[in-house]
Amino acid sequence: MEKKYIQSIVRACDILDYISKNEKVRLNELTKEFKLAKTTIFGILSTLEYKDMVYKDENSNYYLGIKNYTYGKIYERNFDLKEIIHPFLEKLAKKYNETVHMAMEENEQVLYVDRVKSSHAVRLASNIGGYDSLYCSAIGKLILAYKSQCQIDDYINKTDFKKRAPNTITEALKLKAELENIKSKGLSIDNEELEQGLICVAAPIFTNSKFTAAISISGPTNRIDKEMFSNMTEDINKIGKNISELL
Image (cartoon, rainbow, N blue to C red):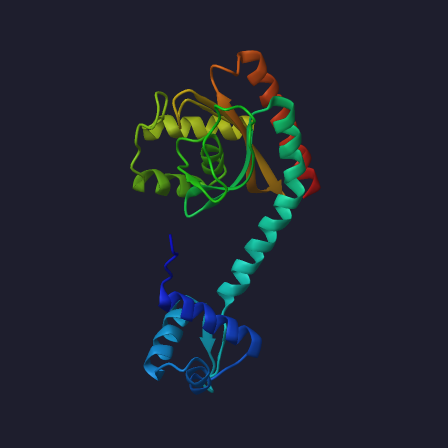
């Protein structure tokens, strides 16, 4: 199937690329370069300026905005973290032959940024770049636990809690109590809250004492008994602390 692209977004990206190579440019220069109407170029620039992707100085020169720096630093941080953390994920996955993830928060959701899959036919269906809800996943609850009380209240007030699995927490008071327990223990467990038949444990990763990311290991409840889950919990707790010491 042929991929379809949104022309206005492609043009905006091309303009950003051109500005990045020329530092400061004027509207007329962009009009000539891209052979587009001045109104079209101006509309794209105005939108990019609104989103802090470009700025315009007193001489009407356009240059890259602060958002590009922000995105660059996030990419740089994520790339470095993956490089450091991935060997630990491989070690944990190899020991238990269950799926291991590294994830971060994006737009009040869990974003999976790295994964080592189990070789079993039955395993957690997940994708790098995929999302999950905060309130019903081990990593998600961990992310919430390290937020301020004001941020937690704000999230709860605007979230539509859906019963995803038998043990999904859908009541605000129960979730708050769960988050307090998670922060106290420094570990988060999802026992059939995200998906029926799935159990997961997650540990936090800190950079300079600030919560940065999380790692988890998960698998089906019919394959992971109490002793195995206890060992997994102990190991992921140690690994999370070891990674945090490196950062």
